[in-house]
Amino acid sequence: MIIIKKFKAPLLMAAVFILLWFWLPDIAARSTDVALDYLKEMVLVIPPVFVLMGLLEIWVPKEKITQLIGSGSGIKGIFFSFLMGTLPTGPLYIAFPLAGSLLAKGARISNIVIFLGAWAAIKIPQLVAEMEFLGLPFTILRFVLTLTAVIIIGQIMEKVIKPTDLTQITND
Image (cartoon, rainbow, N blue to C red; front, side, top):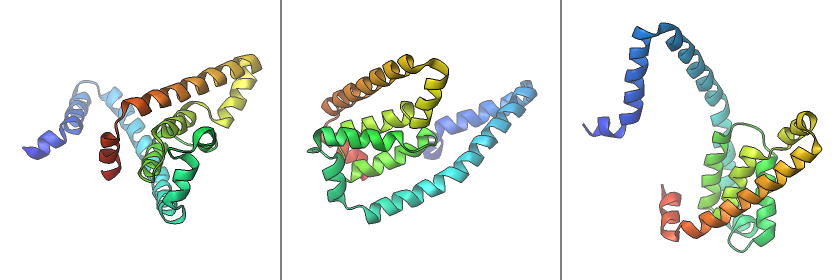
């Protein structure tokens, strides 16, 4: 019974998927293809991310993370977090384990939010493509508004999330 409660959502999705095969087999076949493609992508992407996280744990001391993006980092921390989020390419789900690792090493909540927001919405290749198709004025305005929103959201989250919540996150 405990296992059923713990895995309630995946079991429910599996049941819906099985029922889908009986009533709408074409949709179920397409869903299977999409799920397998996503699984293949994750199998190729996640292991290097875990290697990167392990190297981050070993090579970068906690003091360095605290200095660069910790509570006393100020504008430098905002800039560095933004830069860390805009440079890499890849799906957003890669950034979450990295953000958790940085948080455990003493990164400031607002800087983690900026890192995640930049990863999600302000990547350099994305800006270049956006300039090409939507024009420079649109790209600049969207960039400024997105960056401003991410910084404001980071500040709000830092006020809302209490230090006790943080210890729970970093100890899990």
